[in-house]
Image (cartoon, rainbow, N blue to C red):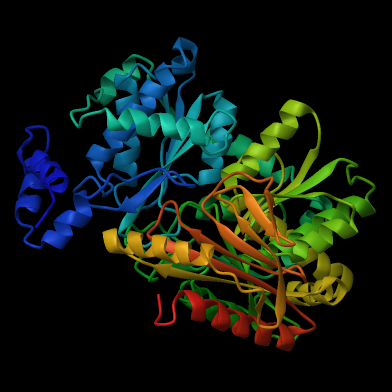
Length: 578
């Protein structure tokens, strides 16, 4: 039987005159109490990537009513900033997902009803261009309607602040607080009136040109690209998303003329009909591009997710086979390529700083150390990298060189404050061309050189999806078990420390000391050899992720150690499976 709170939420949606009849009919037809409970047991909440959830009717689903309520609460928060903030307005973009265009328009019209200007893109655009547009327009904030790489049943709403980075936690908390005191009957402006009043402005090609100009400025060997870029044979897939126009254009304008786009995946498609999930991390997403790569003898394969902020890479190795490079491996290759090129040109800043998420590979620590460049670690979520860039700008201390996350996110430069797959595609193509023409090496061969020089670090993420209320409780139980885990070794590797990020504490040498790191819901342990394990419940999906990084003497040793580490780790926390 449904509890009183869930029953009350359900009945409100059934009986309120505000909701459309189609909504009421759908809810009235539900016979499974478990389904009703899952739709109404909670409201969707902000996480590291904003708000994201399954599409559908209910408080725990993404729908037009939640968009209005969230936007109205967001608008109230902007109103609190004063009239100047309202006039600066909010930049809005959307990707190719179900209802993304409708959600974006509703966002604009709900803001207009609050007297806040909306800068809305004329058609689908990427997340990094939205981040750029916030800064370029001088907007107080931005909204990106996307669920990134999630399955077609999902959509989401990412919120950005005036620096172009995702919304700071204190502002997100204010929005959630206002949502708690906000009903569902939300006013929206009429489109024609909003335009006439100057509260709805449509953006397009001029913004695109300024954005791509900034991407071009990040290249390290532009003359080489123009002269020899056609020698690199590239196969690209946008996976039915927003990346095609801008990845193709950027590559072509900068000399990479030999690019073949997978035709079956070139056009936007709300159903993502050729893949199970539009995620470059998923092996199935590569089937078509690999087929064309083999036919065309391509050097490099690139894939962007629906909102074009994540970049997947495969590359022909020395044996002529196509090798998938993980986000950690691409991050390590680009980190080395950038620092080495800048140092060779005498342009490596003395105060240069690299930034990466705390769950990303330990290999880059060794790389940065060899160049004398500090490496700053931040919580998961690119907004924390953006936050560090802002601190450098405000303090005048430090020059941002490069930031990345193991989840296929990369950024060079400060024109945007989120990961950029358009830029990532350009940098990977340039690095592949550079090593091909100067050393006759492929990117996998470059990676092997880095392993030989700095240590063989092997990384893997293991994720479990646990749906609904029961899943949320199970994730909590797993974190509680990990917090009491007291083992001193795993797979023969001595545990040097344990990190309780949520409590701001670290257990090291038998003593519990303060941890100089933001308080986030992550538990970790660090091995003496530099490897680690991190456990992190997602803030935007019903998942818990485990990040493993082990160090070996060679690939065989590292692979063996990784498998044994995972086996021993999961034996304690989930002997019967998660």
